[in-house]
Amino acid sequence: MANLELIINIIIIALLIPMIIYSYNLNKSLNALRQNQKSLAQLVSALNEATFKAENSIPKLKTATEHSSEGLKEVVDSAKELKNDLLFINERADSLADRLENVISTSRNIKPQTTESSESTDYVDAAEGSLAKDRAAAELELLKALRSIK
Image 1 (tube, rainbow, N blue to C red):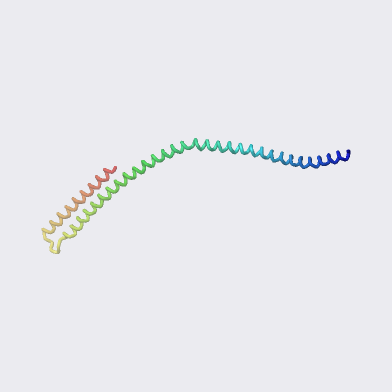
Image 2 (image 1 turned 90 degrees about the vertical axis):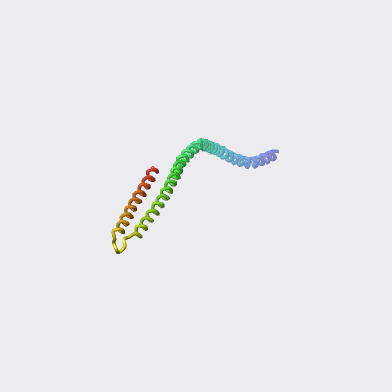
């Protein structure tokens, strides 16, 4: 019977040794899981904090965007007005250039002929006077247009 007890004790010892090794490994795994659980909780906490900050910054971004879009809208409106003014000036300058071109071509056609009579010189003087008047009128119109822009 002593042998039977000894055999049973040896079997129990043989079974307990793997059980102790398995429980040691299980304990290590549980400790690692607990440590990872703490770091996971810290990670979730950091994520919640980042989400909170992002949610709080959204209204600030909206107000900044609205403010900058208002300023940009004012600049665009001003640019549109300036564009219209420049188009008006360009049209006026084109018409003045056409008038000046007509006056110049007219004055070139009226040049005195080889026989310089008093009539032809009077006619040339009148054309030059007309040219000067047209030029002065064109300059005044241009000045008025520039002043109206201001």
